Structure formats: structure tokens, C-alpha cells
Length: 145
Image (cartoon, rainbow, N blue to C red; front, side, top):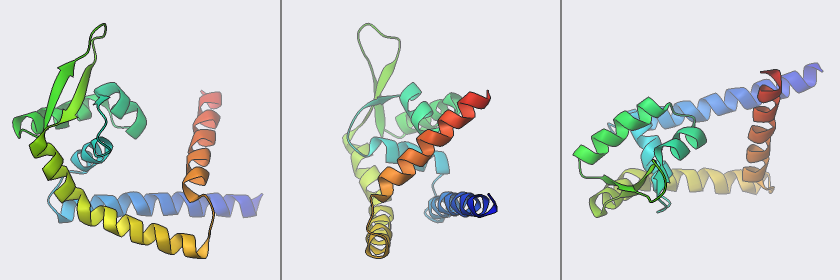
């Protein structure tokens, strides 16, 4: 049992270090962490609702709403009402796409380098393992509620 606890502790520590590195990187380039998360979420080119981003990225809706308003003022995103729903889809404008690409370029290069180096040492489906652990942890937390 102690061995499992130590392994889980190492995972938790690693996750916190990764989160901290993204936070430090955002601050270094003059971005708020939640703005970085929103831009990252939208960087795949797909539109999302505030609710989707809030639920997937675990960012409070009020926080996402504040960041979106800032991005609208800066001309980076637009909201479009979809038929038959109260939710609006968030789209990057051309200026937003360019800004996002500039902001995320160095970050994504660092991620790819780190990912490739990790896979050289541990050639496994790393992303699938993280995703599965996150899903299992979510289910365990829900069972406790």
C-alpha cells in the first residue's frame, strides 16, 4: 500500500509541477494563466461554448466569462448564438488566431520536445495513461460525493 501511495504522490507532484511550469511560462510572457488556458482550448480551431471550456478545463464559468469579455474587447474572439440553445459558440477571429499562434508557438515547441524525449525513455501511450488516470480519479471522487 505504501508503494502505491508513494507512486500516486509522485504523480500528484509531477502534475503540480507541470501546472506550475505553465503558470510560470504564462507569467513570463505577460499572460494570465486563465487566458493561456482559453487560448490553448481554442487553438485546435474548433468552436466551444463557455460551459464546455469550463467543464473540460475545470475553470469556473465566471472566470471564463471574464477572460472572454477581455478577449472580445481585444478583438481576439467573437461569440455566435447557435439555434435552439442559450449557449453561444466561441470563435477565434483572424487576429485571435494570429495572437494565439504567436503566444503558443514556443510553448508547443517545448511541449513537443519534452514529449518526444519522454517517449524515447518510455515508449508508451502516455496521453492515454494520463487520460485514463484522470477519468478514474474523477469517477472515484464522484463515488465519494
